[in-house]
Amino acid sequence: MTAIVPLLDWLAGWPGAVWLQQSGTAYLFVNAAHILGIGLLLGSILPFDLHLIGLNRSAPTQSIGPLLSRIAAIGLALAMMTGLWLFTVKPREYIENPAFLTKIALLVLALGNIAVQHIGTSFRAALRGEGVAVRVRLIAAISATLWLSVLVAGRWIGFIAR
Image (cartoon, rainbow, N blue to C red):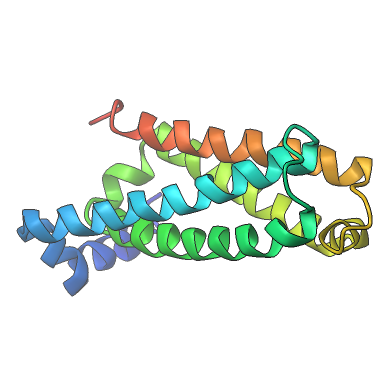
């Protein structure tokens, strides 16, 4: 921990962090943007995962998959950028918060799961409407579980205040 203290202090002194520390309004808008990113991510990835699992086949995969994937990517980018920015407000506190550490570990797993899904040819075949393989269904179930877990861990952070 002591080796990263200078980095954490540097992050806390970054002008963007100082601005959020001093402006409740700025913090409010960055936090709202973080929530928007989470909403876009989960609001698109969960329906798509459920579709891939087979619980919602109301539209062909090739018509909803690309759109939902793009929306999820936008949400992920927004959530990660604003999340990192919010982290800089109190980096020393967050780095010692078990809920934050749990969230980061789950986030890494969720991102790894995305990579595993997109590397496979079965996923691309599903996007082309050629059927959804068991592997794709399993990874989609893992995805839904991981993203919901990231959400819960993120909410848990505020309940473990130091």
